[in-house]
Image 1: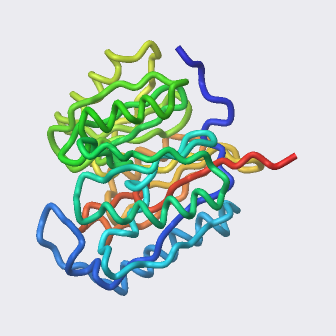
Image 2: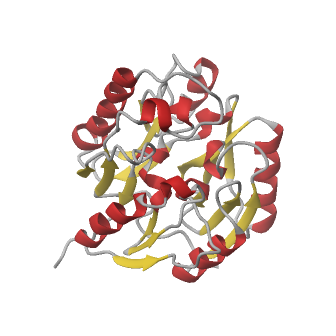
Amino acid sequence: MAGLMAGFGHYTHAVVRGIPASLAKEALRSNPVEVDLAAAHREHESYVEVLKTKLGLEVVELPADESLPDCVFVEDAAVVCGDTALITRPGAESRRREAEVMKGALKDLNLNIVEMTDENATLDGGDVLFTGREFFVGLSKRTNQRGAEILADAFKDYAVSTVPVLEGLHLKSFCSMGGPGLIVIGSSEPAQKALKIMQQMSDHRYDKLTVPDDLAANCIYMNLPNKGHVLLHCTVEEYPESAKVFEKLKDHMLIPVSNMEKVKVDGALTCCSVLINKKANI
């Protein structure tokens, strides 16, 4: 059983991608809702600004592609752990080409690229929860057992367990890491059931922070030099009750980030960046 990865939560780079105008009408969504494109752009700009200016990451900004309405949600196209990047095969056929530009960007960052070429495999990065000790992979509408097996093969140092996602789009639609050993989880019955399965499958005892709203459980945790524990989480405007719960994390630098528009097309905070820890070349 691997211990906690050294430098868990430490990142130097983030890869993001622009929002195409086609997102408003053509991006996939669970519910038919209108997206305010201008507001979505503002929201995404402030998200990128937090990564760059507030947190000091090197941000690689990839251009939007009008023929790929969902391309802003870069997390689904790659899973990065250490210096290996697994280029995925997204579950929605309309999203498969998103992986091409992501592969180029991660190659440019000198990561070891592993490609998922098996046509029977599907995997969205939104279904992959890396705890710093092991991987949990949600088996969902978008990710299957073969995809999980290929991920296990790409990251052999870590145990990989699968978790059925019976409601919601992805595993991380109702959970994420809030720190080393801390899982943030939604309070719905399917979310709590999934957590129970994760706890049963793991040798490690995780602490949990339960928030009333499942979507609010999707946060971005980092551990950065000079800043310590950092958590990007939902705003009071979106989820007032859940936002209050994060205030319990007294040791964290808490940064509320709005996601009101992108959530309409099933996008959460983790969806919009791929985070990388690049070792300095000595």
